[in-house]
View (cartoon, rainbow, N blue to C red):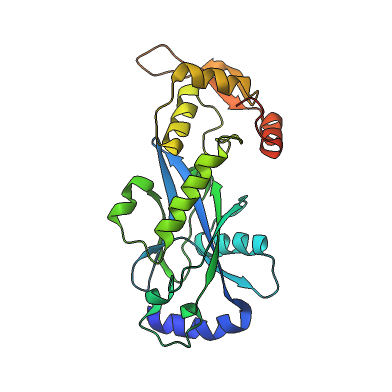
Length: 249
């Protein structure tokens, strides 16, 4: 069965299972080699890259749906996602399915709700679904070199802008960094997200004043310079800051 036949077959099933005109698109960011990555799939149909999105079943909540979609489409489980935007331009997805007539479920006009999350790429064993050729982490810097379908480039950019706004009042790093890290590594994460360099002294002072870090009796060894101190997040304080916001940042 080729990819077009597969979509035609699934279209009939989708009309019975899913709500019409509503889709979800999760943007999962990762951090690796001092760069941000995003989780993408490449569809068998058209061989274009997309976010691992999907549709909402008639009997499930939105938050339940996005968790299921990530598991089904990419093998990603146990993630906490937050809504960040709604995308509803006309013809945002119809052109992608222009090879089909108007009866195809996937070709209908869909309003999509965007979710985002931050996770260490090493945490997941990615598994592509039956509609996809592959499921991979792609560096944000490489996105201009690949063909992103529909309006998914716009969705990723909006998620990144939301992330930049969020770190002004919520901590980040818990799901992106290894369990033990240096202040320099944490600063680099903030710089990559913000897209600008930060003053080291100011950053170190502010981040320590937040009370979300624990200094460990260990140092990062193997470098050419003095071994820097290692830190970990104080989970209780971190979760409290997530819930109540940062008071001293």
